[in-house]
Each structure stands twice: as C-alpha cells, then as structure tokens.
Amino acid sequence: MMQRGVGVIGAGPGVSALHLPTLERLSALFRVAHVSDSGSGRAAELADRVGARSSAGIEGLLADPAVEVVAVCSPPDQHAAQVLAAVRAGKKGVLCEKPLATTPEEAEAVIEACQAAGTVLVVGTNHAFDPAWTRAKHHLLANRGRPQSWTVTIALPPNGRYHDAVTESAPPSAAGARPLPDWSNPQVAAAVVRQLVLGLAVHDLPALRDFAPRVTEVVFAEPISPIGYRIGLLAGDVLVQLNAVMLPGGADALWRLSIGLPFDDIDVDFLPAFVHAGSADVTVRQGDGQVTRYPLQEDDGYLMEWRALAAALDDDHPGDYGELLDDALFAIRIADAAAEAVRKGMAS
Image 1 (cartoon, rainbow, N blue to C red):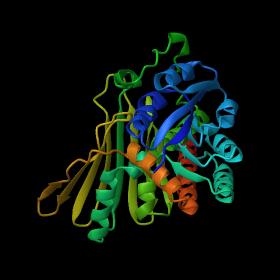
Image 2 (image 1 turned 45 degrees about the horizontal axis):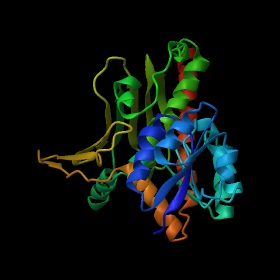
Image 3 (image 1 turned 60 degrees about the vertical axis):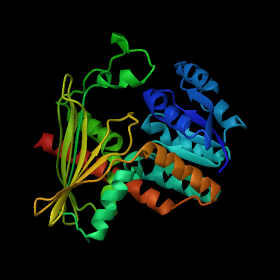
Image 4 (image 1 turned 180 degrees about the vertical axis):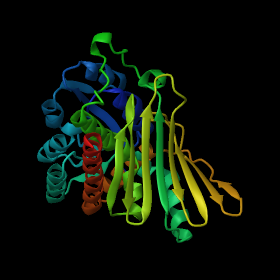
C-alpha cells in the first residue's frame, strides 16, 4: 500500500480529535497535505500541527496536486456539494462524514457522479466499520437470528464534558452559544429532529438496514428537551426504537445498540464520539442465563473506515455504490417520516 495525501475540508472538533489522530496512526497509508475551513482561521492551527498547508474555502484544497483523497468533514448540508466538487477536481477518493446527503436528489447525484468517474467513496458511519458490529453481525448470521426488536439509546453530556478534553479548540464565547430550539413550534421541532436523525441516528442505521431493509411505518416521533428525540418505527416485523438526549450535568456518555432475538439478546456499547480506545463492547445474553462478552479489539471504526478507503484505492475497486445510495436513502426516509410525525403529533 502507498501513502496518499489527504485534503481535509473542515476544521472543527471532529477533525481535531477524530480524523487527524486517526490519520496519524495510519501514517504508512495517508498523510494530511491540506486543511481548509470556511473562514474561521482554525485550519491554519490544525495544519501547523501536522505540517500541512491550509486555506479558506475549498478551491485551494481541491487545486492542490498533493491532495489525492478528500475528507469531507463540514456541516451536513454541504456534504453533497463538496463531494461533487472533489469528483469534478479529479480526486481519487473521498471519505464523507455522515450523512452523505440530506435529500434523495443530492444522494442520487453524488452516487451517479462517483460511479461515472470511478471515484472511491466511503461514508464515515464508523459504527458500521467497528469490529464489534462485525462480531455481533456474525453472531446473528451464525444463529440465523431474526431480530425482533432493535433499540438504540444515546445519552450524551454536553460537549464540554469530554469534547474539550480531546480537542484544541477554544471554548465558545457566550455570544456564539446556540440557543435551545423552540420545541413549541412544530416546524422547528420537526426540523431539529430531522437533523438529529441525520446527525446521530444515522450512525446505526446502516446496521439496521442489514437486517431490516424496509421501513414500514414511523409510529411516533417526538422531541426530547433540552435536545433529543424519541422515535418508534416498524421495519418489516422488527420493532425499532431510537432514543437520544443531551443533558447538561447528565451521566457519562452512553451509546448502546440492543438487539432482541427469539432466544438471546445482544448489547453493543459504543465508545463516546472522538474517543480512541479500541472497539465497542459486545455482550450476548442467552435465554439460559449464560452471558458471553467478546474481547475488545484494538482497532476502532475510525481506523477501519480509513483502512477500507485505502484498500479500495489500492485494489482499484470503488466499492458498492448501490449500497451507499440505499443507506443514504434509508436514513433520509426515516428522517423525513420522523419530522412529519413530529408535525402531526404537535398539531393534534
């Protein structure tokens, strides 16, 4: 495998604490060549840290001949346009943070462009790349398990509880703090829940789609104060509940995927975002009371998604575009249906 230059679009905490350390661990495969921001000035600081160039906007990064691979780590509503720009610039590969797109039309345009150009595309749903999910999936397949229930529980403290400990970003000023959404406004509530589905729930939706590829109905959806959601849906005959909340002063972070099977249950406990401490924790509880806990793996989903990109580039095999499109459309359908359920629920 050869080392490739990476251009990172975005200079937020996710780049500082997630992608730059991951790429440093994979220095035989990648080196950060360029970091760009939207004008904040943060790119220069991050670029200096790794000996890379920096710029504002994406034009300089995409014109840089040292950049072979682009990491799109900007706000979600910019993802599709920036992936398309990278394809037009002739870049060989793109790792796009989730979601790939926020509308079906954007998702289809991105996949069509990547396929036409032969651009390798990886979407950073790191939970789907985590070795722990691979083990849980093998358990399901080996036991011919058909999930009966699927629950994702996310409890996140405010960013300052752990993001500040692993980033070099300055604390936000009081003037720059975002106000809490007006949950009494149905349109606002629906829009925020949609954003949260595409920003948080999307981590685990590719895994759900592996076993329940069709969403039959979103039964209920409601916002949770101060920031969060509670969503219940049917995916074929699988009962799915998605729960997320951010609580100031709340407990330590919890991100758990629980799968109910006819004869046993599986819990996958993922680490908090931005933490590099190996794989998630998989526990299987069988009907006879036996409990099996799989050993933790050294690698995490962040490493594995970048390794998947490197392997695809080396093998000149861009991957399954159809799967990526289906994952994107699956998440968007759930987000849209949840938003509509919020509007209807608040109007009734």
